Length: 129
Image (tube, rainbow, N blue to C red; front, side):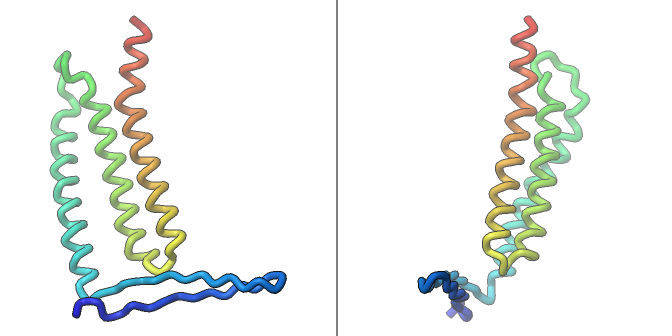
């Protein structure tokens, strides 16, 4: 069986005679690190290909591809966010709330910056016409 450690972290909090019990169920396996390695390896391979393409097209001066430098910047931002999330996966494995907060904040910041880099220059160009 792959699942070898299923343990519960239970915290009791007593305030005003009311006992609150917080339970976190963590499912762990022997192949957890292998699975994450394959998953993040695939993501990193795709990200490296995207970085190479973004680096090669950032100086293109074609009228129809005027968004190339903004798209390249968006790919750079996603690379940084992906690196932070990979590090956080291994360092904050047991801190559930911290990992979830960092994971969600990373995706929110990443997607917001991408939307800002892609659409704000288009809006400014259309407004100035």
